[in-house]
Length: 453
Picture 1 (cartoon, rainbow, N blue to C red):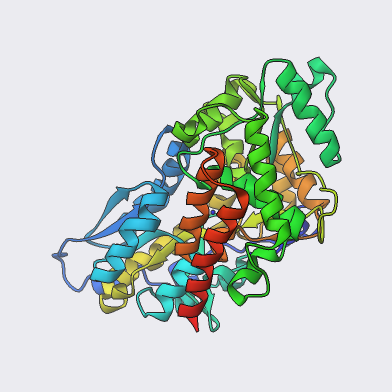
Picture 2: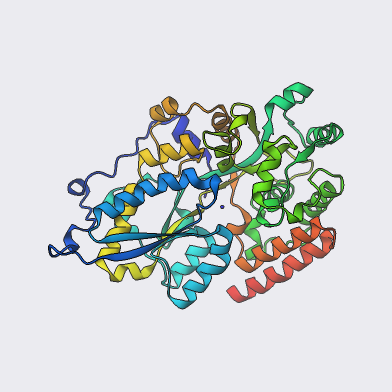
C-alpha cells in the first residue's frame, strides 16, 4: 500500500524517456473483441471489476478509472462491467481470500502484489498477463514490476507509486516561527512546542491498524535499518531484537506524552485526515496519495498551497541510511486465471490494460490526484503540467533520499501483518508492553517461517 523511487524521480526530472502510446489495434496487434463477435447478434456477457475506490475522497480516482472502463465496454461487443466497490482492507483480508478458496474470483480485482498476488500466482489462480503486455508493447514502460512478478512472468499491475513522509501546515509553522526538523531531537522539541500551543503534534486514528503502522514502520526502519523488515521471514532478524523493541517503546512514549489525539482507537482514517485539515493537528504522517486531499475536489482544498512535506528525520543510533523512505508500487489490479478460458473476457482484460495504463492516464492521476506514476513519463510533459508546489516538494524529498524500503505488509505473511496490527493497538491502549508485543509478533513470525519451509 518496489525498489527505489529515485528511479521515478530520475525519470521525471532528469531523463527524457517518453512513454509510447499503446497505439491502435492495427499498430500493436491488440484485439479487444472484434474477433469474438462472430455474428450480427452479440450475446451479452458481464465481468466484475472489484475496486477500493469508495467514499468521497476517492471519487476523483474512480471517475478517471471509469473512463477506461467505459472505453473497455465500447470496444468489446456485448460487454457490461459490474463495478464492485469494497473497502481495501476488507477486500484483502476477507473477500479475496474467500473467493480464491471458492474459485469465484472477480475478473478484475484490487490487489496487493507482494505477498498476495505472488502467492495466488503460485497456486495458479491469477492470470499471467505477460503476453498481453508484450502484445501491447508496454512491458518495459513500467518503472518496476518486481512486486507483481514470479519467475519472470507478470501477474498484475500497480495502480501508482507512493511514498510516505510528514505533511505539515506551512502557514501554522510560519506563524509560530517553527522550522522543518532536520534531526530527531529537533522533532521532539517541535512536538513539545506544538502541544504547548494547544494543538496535537500528529494526526492519529487507529481503529484500522495500518494507519498508526505507517509511522511505526518508519520508526523501526530508522532504528533497525531500512532492510530489517525483509529479514524477518529469513530469520536474519527478529521482532524481539533490541532496536525493534525500542521502536515500540518510542511509539508508546509518544502516545503517553500526548503527541497524538486521545481516543484514537475509535477513530477511522477519515478522522486522521480531518484532524489535519481542520487545524487540530499540525502534522500528519501519511502516504503521498494524501496530496489529493489538498487539490481540487479534495476535502482539504482550502489548504491548497499551505501544506508542505518532509522526510522523517534521522534517529540517534539508527542503522543504515537515515534518509531512506518507504516507497510502494504494491497496490494495483490483478485478474482471475479463469479469464483465460473465455476469449471475450480475455479481450475485456486486454482492453482495460490498453486504456488504463497510458501516459495520459498516468499524467492525470499525477496532476489531478497527486498519485506518483508507476510508468515512465516524458520529462518535458511532467515539467509542463505539474504545478502543485507540494508535489514538487515530494519530488525533492525523493531526490535527496538515497534509498527506499518496502512497507512491512509487503514483506511478511498476512498472519504476521494481522498480529502486528493487534499489537500496535494494544501498545496504543497501554494494555501490553513493548517487550510483550514484540514477543507475540515473533511467535507468529516463527510459525509462519516454519510453515514456509
